[in-house]
Amino acid sequence: MSESCSESSCSTCGVEGCSSRKAEDFRAPANAKSHIKHVIGIVSGKGGVGKSLVTSEIAVLLRKKGYKVGILDADITGPSIPKVFGVHGQAMGTEDGIIPFESKTGIKIMSVNLILDNEESPVIWRGPVIAGVVKQFWTEVVWGELDYLLVDMPPGTGDVPLTVFQSLPVNGIVVVTSPQELVGMIVKKAYNMAQMMNIPVLGLVQNMSYVSCPDCGKKIFIYGEGHGEETAKELNIPAYAALPIIPEIASLCDAGAIEDFDNTYMGDFIEKLQ
Image 1 (cartoon, rainbow, N blue to C red):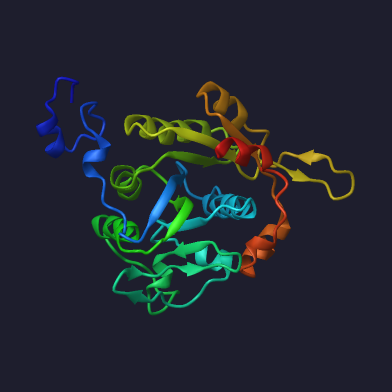
Image 2: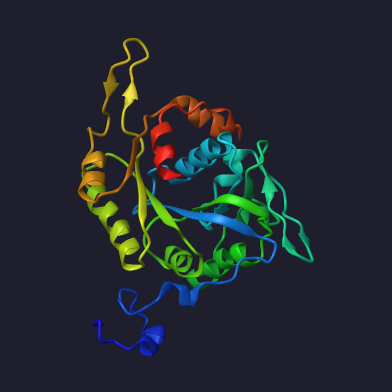
């Protein structure tokens, strides 16, 4: 639709790229007991790049700096955040809303796994239902006072990212990628969607960038050296980090102990993200 499209018609036209649309027109009110300073979406153009892990690492680093942090797990059909933090059980509700779980260091977490009778049950829901649940995690969860709410989104540019961008006051996004050549195009799709929705891209994280030889420390680029840093510069993305493959992280995630990992790879990234 062209720029001459009227605002009234844009509200029902369904063309998300229309420049006359205003994202704030679709924003849902937060829970009355929630006071959140910054909402940051963690996105990826494709699956399998470690987006939930990066979300968890950012949350842990922000918490270590003394910030009050929460994670809204919007990856409804592939929720892994509770497992990574060792959080299990069913969330309880009060007259104020749903009470999120807290990790051992005080990171607040809400995920579909925390409202299912069995956390191993598959979520076989259609897109609009999934998007509705994500919206409920914003409007009905009592997040309390938070400096940062990280929204771990499913891969791609479908219903859930669109719902988050339109319904939540997103201050910016972090894009997670891997070194393969194909990913450059995928990153730009996520970047362009954010641009269309007038949401800043705050950072780019290239995960699985290399493995360090345990004997000599030499970097081994299993998937090639990648072009993450070049892409960040090309798109003027202010924060960039290249993360290695570390077997210890996998073990800690399996044990629900991601908060025990001493991340020395994202210090500069976190400083620029704040």
